[in-house]
Length: 144
Image (cartoon, rainbow, N blue to C red; front, top):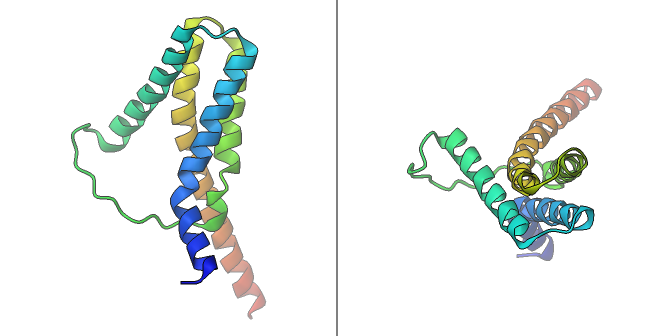
């Protein structure tokens, strides 16, 4: 196996996790630099992120006890960058800290990190598919 193939496999497997990690850490940093965060705020943030996964899982599967078969993802390379998902999520976290305060803020930023990141991943996927379609149409146009 050549080095480029190894690199392709690694970044394909790590893509979603790295974008989510950036969003989680940056949103947490916004909370830490905006407020003096009590220990309860840290736990509320974590519970919010977990609750966000609960919301997404229940929405996607309609049943928390459903069995899921893991399938290999088919990705368009540009969708792995997570420019929209990571930065958009952190920006929403920033806006929440400017508009809200109090204990509930930590919980809501936690929910935001999980839900908005995953929703914006879908937006990136659709945008990437559109770019792929657009590229195919341009190639067909010039191949005439």
